[in-house]
Length: 197
Image (tube, rainbow, N blue to C red; front, side, top):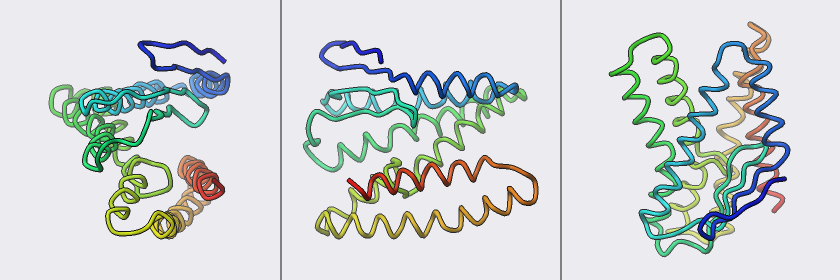
């Protein structure tokens, strides 16, 4: 593990982050993994920039096997600021999708636009600890207790994951495409991990 601090923010790189990136880049011959990695970094930079714009600094930026995690020093002052931070990552992806689509309509540019579109929309899914799931929980907390909000979020996550899992099974059986199945397994694992906390 590599750890260092930048202006009071701890930056941590785990071994598994490098292992997952290495395997992805070795297996993928299309360049799609590299585009996905760049899009993920830009997504997280969007969150980081909004953190600073609303007057907060993350306590830690952790690069892990499951992705990049920003840890807050304390709860944000108000829900609107936290909502802005949660929306900013996908906003960056969707804006870049539009930019690449309009100004670089080459095959590579359009593919990068598609990667940004998929990543931006994927993170807005109201599932578990994805940005969309955290946004839904934040909105529910305006009216409900944390326990009740958490129960509703788990039910909503399951209602979304179940049809996704069925579609992933159909895709695997019909075309041997395993991508959505891996995605569903990842989201299911996140949900189980969140429920056990």
